Image (cartoon, rainbow, N blue to C red; front, side, top):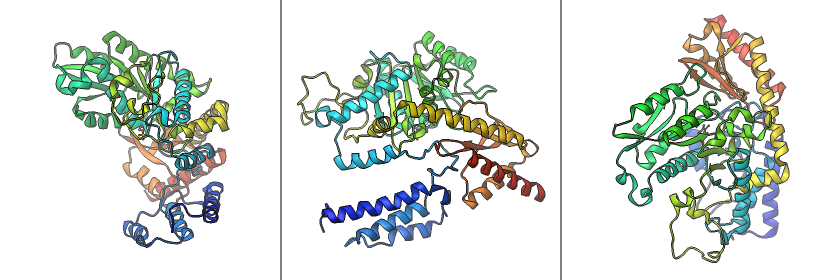
Length: 475
Ligand SMILES: *Cc1c(COP(=O)(O)O)cnc(C)c1O
């Protein structure tokens, strides 16, 4: 047994894998959206193969494919109406295969100049699409929105406090506060914990009737800090909240930030993809004035996890935040005007994350993205109209394809949504979730799959109608 196998074995393995993924990829809808969550059974299954002497490749592959097919929520399913996890496009799948095979090390530019420059190109293209000035914009790929948001907090600290890199939080006179809305993603709290600020220094601002950050309250809260032991560090506006797809009023937040000299970060992990559509990009108005942006390609750009981008309007800030010099890192390119990604981001050894996006653009181009995003927004509109025609009431207000709804008569009955959801999930024909809006539980249905069409929406609405009928009969 040799790690490399021989050519015949490799071909056989790739063929087996191809056959399996081909079956899954072209028949995804036939699979159950939900797995059986029996921990004993799953652990027993995982532990069953021999790990001491290894197994025949076919047998090992079959084991893994069985495990993945049986014990996974199938996010590539066209009726997975879930948490922004897309169906991976084929470019993204192949990109991960290529990346693993060539295994370029992106820590230093000179080790992987093609890969580093390909990522830099995608960063420039996206920064331009978001309206940042391409002469001063910068950015870096991250594993996910959580890493990108953490990067934003670190950059804000390093921008405001010139000696932060040396002195850390101990050098600060006042406690820095992070403002975001109550509906912001909790990776913000996590970032505050990791940085050592503590999550108490994250101040969630209430939302208004439209579920957007109440900027009047934000202004008052900032005003109150004068002559206090606290100082406002950054405001995070969300462009497409995780719960309801709401876009904060970015222009008003920017005005407040500018007037008070505060870092303005936009968490556009999900909704950022709206800038790829000429019809929709106005929804993100104000994002072009931001100091930094989080954008997850592994959400609405349909590439596999984890592919996120941190973008910033300040070309010097990533270097200031992360640069470290060492003797052992390659110096072949030290005379060139290049950036070593390890000195520019949280990660050191780096995977070629950006290939998923670069290859998607090589295969399909920005035009395909524009069309896909417009199509999905239309499917979202279709869902809204079918729900309303069937007596459901919609509780969120967004142009993005994310719909929160319930039944008007039953909305105060806390058991209603739970029961209907449990019944649908147990059938495994669709996947959706619940999200409370002003204490009213709603069904949350999000379209992030380019294969979800009107037929799937009709099926979902039928399932919901049937479960509602059964519930009404029994209560
Ligand atoms: C998904 C999400 C995140 C977290 O991103 P990950 O890629 O899961 O790390 C942060 N913010 C928002 C608004 C999100 O939707």
